[in-house]
Amino acid sequence: MKKIPTRTCLGCMNISPKKELIRIVKQNDGTIFVDKTGKASGRGAYICNNIECLEKAIKSKRLEKKFETSIDKEIYENLRGVIIDNQSK
Image (cartoon, rainbow, N blue to C red; front, side, top):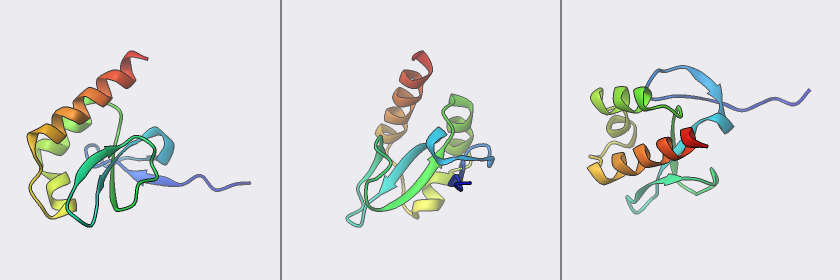
C-alpha cells in the first residue's frame, strides 16, 4: 500500500492529503507565489481550498510567521482568486 503524503493547513490546522491543499511557495530570493503545480522549488506552506481557512491564516498571520517575512496583500488576493476558481469548478 502506497503512503499518501499529508500536510497541515495553516488556517484550520487540519492534516489533509497534499493533493487537496493549495501550496504557497517562498523562493530563496524572497519571491512568494501560489504554486499551482505543487513542484516549484522553495519553502512551501499549505492551505485548504476554502475562504474560511484563508481568513484564519490571514488573521493569525500564520503565513507571515511561516515564511518569516511580511506578505503583500496582492498575494492574499491571488490566493482568494485561486480558491474561488477551484470552488466554482
